[in-house]
Length: 194
Figure (tube, rainbow, N blue to C red):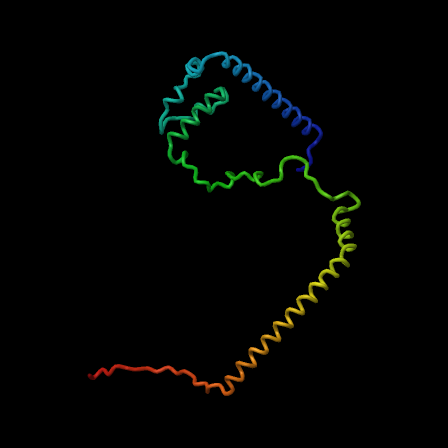
């Protein structure tokens, strides 16, 4: 059998898909009309009409599935879910270990336009201009660094002279260092016979 559908098979599939879309649209329209009719009624009347108990009277172990139907208005579904979360301590305990709990947008720069110095065809133009500006300013910096290095060299030379004078004095006092005696480990054993 060929995997390629014939034109009649494609047409039949398209007609079936169109019929399914129309059926879905009709169901959604009927549900919207039902929701509009229920919006005018009080919560007690809606619960009585749908045959549901009061969501606030539900306890752990009761069936909450009936409130998940699409015919139940959103505010009643939320009331039932709130009661479910409060009734079961396992559901009420948020341990923070869920990957989807984090707000990954919290550290973002914002949801607006991000400013950048990148220009199409020119690249990072501001960065290149800054580099050129620094190249022009570099000789001034080198002159300042050379002056500082000269001052530091003089201070270091003076300190070295003082250091050599002190070490010469210490060497004159301690002409002959004491002989080095390595330390050895000594063990003492108690006599078992005593």
